[in-house]
Image (cartoon, rainbow, N blue to C red; front, side, top):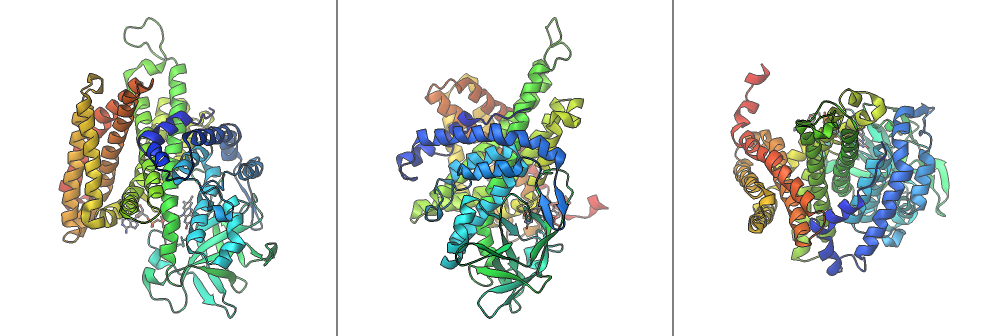
Length: 586
Ligand SMILES: Cc1cc2nc3c(=O)[nH]c(=O)nc-3n(C[C@H](O)[C@H](O)[C@H](O)COP(=O)(O)OP(=O)(O)OC[C@H]3O[C@@H](n4cnc5c(N)ncnc54)[C@H](O)[C@@H]3O)c2cc1C
C-alpha cells in the first residue's frame, strides 16, 4: 500500500503542541514563516510519497549484495539518494556556513518522519549523516570542518557512527579499539566495530566514519575514550579524493528487518593503521559522541512514529475494504471497521502514533529553543534532556506495538508478506534496540534526567501537564467524556512515581532501576495524553473542522490508554522487591 505523508497533521502538531506559532512570532528561526514551513513539508511529502515509498518493498525483497568488501544497494536507491541530496534535503538542518539551510530541528523532524515512514532503510543513511554533521560542526577543528563538513552537510558524503564492538554494546567503557599518535599530528586506528549502519555502500564517493577508540595512555573507563574521523578515502588539501584508507567492511549482517540498510562489521588498521583525525579533545570523545547521539535518539524516535503512521494508514484502508461478518444490526456482510474490536485496534494505532509524534516534536522544539544563552535557553535545554529518552523509547516501543496491531487488523493476510504489514513489524523492531536500547533510555530518564536541576526540570514539566488537565476541565465540553478525569489521574500517578523514584535514587538504586521501564511508559502515557488534549483544545478554540475527531482521539487515549497509568505507577512503587529477588528466575 502506498504512503501519504500526513502533512496537515504534522503542521497541526508543530503549531499546537510544539509551539511553532510562538517560535515564528518571536523570530526564533529568523524570517521563517508558516507558509514556508508548509511549502517545505508539502515538497518533502511529495518526495517521500513518490520517490521513496516505492523503494520500501522492492528494497526489502532484493536486499543487499556484499562482494570483496563492497556493498551494492538495491535497485533505485542510488538514484533516489542522489535526487534527494540534489533537492537539498540532507542540507536542511545543516549549518549555513557550510552550505546548510540552518532550518530548525522541528522542521527537520517532520521530514525525518516522512523519510522513515516512506522507507526506513533509506532514512537511516541521512539519520546518521545528520548526526555526523552535528558532531563535526560542534567539535571539529576548523581544518577538519573546512575539509569535510560541506560534503557531509550536502550529503555528497555520508557519515557513520562507530561505537559498538563485540564486548562493548550498551557498555561503552569496554571499548578496545586503539588509537596511536602519529608524528604528523594525525592518529592511526586499529580495531574492529560491529553493527555499523551504512559502514559501506555505493550511493556516495566517500564515507566519513566517526570512530570511538582509546589512546595508549588513556585513563580507564569512559574518561579514556576519544572520537576520531576516519575517512574511507583520504581527502587532499584541494578537496579531491586521495588514497583509500586502511578501513574496510568485512561483512554485512542478515537481519530481521531493514533489509536494505547495510549493517557492517568494520575492520580498521589491518594494514598498519587507519589514518584518523581527532574530533574534539583527547579522552573527551564520549561527550562529543553524545552531541550526535541526542539528535540521533530523537531521530530514531521519529522512525518509530514513521513506521507507526504508515502501519496505521495501511490498517485503516484495509479495515474499510475487507468485509467479514455482519456488524450488529447490519443486514449484509460489513467492512471489518464496523466491528468494535477492529475499531478499538485502529483507534489505538492512531492515538499512540499521534501521541508519539507530539512527544517527538515537543522534544525537537525544546532542542531548537535551547540554542543561545539565558534562563529560557537553559530551561529549554533541560526540557530537551528530560524528553529525549521518552521520545526515543516511547515512540519506538509504540512503533512495534502499532505495527503489530497493523498485522492483527489484516488477519491472516497480515502474516503474509505481500500486504507489507509484516515488513513494518519487522522493520520497527530494531528501533527499540539501537541508539541505546529502550532499557538504557529508561535508566537515563530515571537516573540522570529526573535529578536535573534538583528535580525542578521534571516538576516544571508536571506543572505544564496539570495546566492541560485544568484546561480540559474548564472547557466543560461533554464530548471530552472522562478525558479530564483520566488525565488528572495519570498525572497524579506520574507525580507520585516521580517522587518515589527521586527519594530512592541514592538510597536504593536497585529499586529505582527496577521501575525505570514502567516509569518511562507512564511518563509517555501522561505526556502523550495531555498533548492530544492540547491539540483537541486548540482545534476547538480555532473552530477547526478537525475538532470533533481530535476530541475523539484525545478521549480515546485518556479512557483506554492513560488509564494504564495507575497500574504502571504500582509496578514502579510496589514492584521492585520481586524484580530484585531471585524467586521468579528460579
Ligand atoms: C541493525 C543494527 C544497526 C546498528 N547500527 C549501529 C551503528 O551504526 N553504530 C553503532 O555503534 N552501533 C550500532 N548498532 C549497535 C546497537 O547500538 C547495539 O546493538 C545496542 O546499543 C545494544 O548493544 P548490544 O547489542 O551489545 O546489547 P547489550 O548491551 O548486550 O544488551 C542486551 C540487553 O541487556 C540490557 N542491558 C545491557 N546493559 C544494561 C544495564 N546496565 N542495565 C540494564 N539493562 C542493560 C539491554 O537493554 C538489552 O536488553 C546497531 C545494531 C543493529 C542490530
